[in-house]
Length: 473
Ligand code: 4AD
Ligand code: MG
Image (cartoon, rainbow, N blue to C red):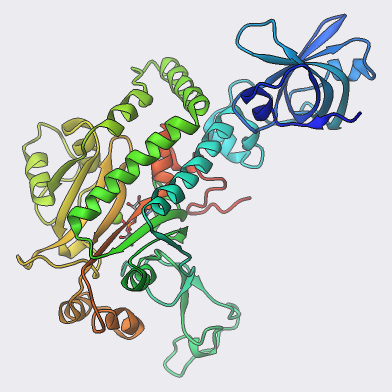
């Protein structure tokens, strides 16, 4: 009788005992004695490991009992109730097959491996306890996103990745071309002849899917995108990636109030869903942060306690003008002086969320000068219906706004920003044919994962981070 191949997750969650099974995974450790050895195995299906007892009588015992951590094995045996504390089930092996060996140079063998070191081993870090936890949480946060919007009758839209417009008007785009860069076709005026390029004009990787989502919101009511976005900004920080994932809901007939509520509900849903689906992963992360705090002699604040409070509380709401007043009155040395009209810096955002409000805060009605052209203009002529959600530890996690639905005002604003209206003709036409008030926002997925996992660097919550000067793997 051949034993059924089962995941450790399945074995432990039922639990399955008194039955033969086959398991496959990577050895965490082997403890050898004369008569038998204990093998600790992880297969990535869950946080837990399974202990296997291999008797000295099994075939190839000498090799098996001296396997190094990281060896890939396939084991057949009987699942039995465990006598040891902690685990419900263990396996009595009848056959252990070494599928893939490792040698002493296996990079993940050392006990204490720093995050910097693991980033250089990005192809192997999925095998570690820590990265297993982070990426199972990432998976569940994706599922949570589809569930949250799906349950509220949003439609999932796949917005294009190749685009000819600069949708944020910030000029931070990666160009896409099929021209030979060593032999570019030139025009008489000395500029590159993009008419000869693949699309007959310059094209880029998208920085957002918002403008396309607006088209669909003004036809299907409620949509959201969930896809990769690309920004060629030269920011080497723990919160910037050159390629990151964004979730962008866009809703017809919704104003800024509704937008702020949707954003807060979504963040709380992500926390609740992760608490429900990933308790073991969250606990592992909490222990990891506790261990690190102790190593570094820092005070340990359990991020799970903080998240638990957040999911049960209201988000604070202030305007940009109020935020500046709070910052200006604060007894705190800022590198950048908080003045009305200047952009909020990370230090300002974090002060508001961490020190002043001690929780998430939604800041609205920013000066139009440093916000994108598409935001609805307020009657004061100075501010727009923008909103940013700031959270402790991360800063801005969501950026959004009510959109300008008036054709004339939008046209004027595009001109004011020195942008060309030509490539945006279709976006402007939305305001000419059956326009409606509408709003939306973008949640930076990796920033949200940072928030929920408590990880301090965004490079550790995306599979293979792309940052300036770094596109390995
Ligand atoms: O504030 P942003 O630039 O807003 C937009 O792109 C709008 N089109 C969204 C909308 O209204 N539909 O970006 C949204 C979020 C930020 O709040 C941040 O969390 C994340 O995307 N983000 C980044 N995350 C990682 N690396 C970067 N370089 C990021 N830039 C923005
Ligand atoms: Mg923003």
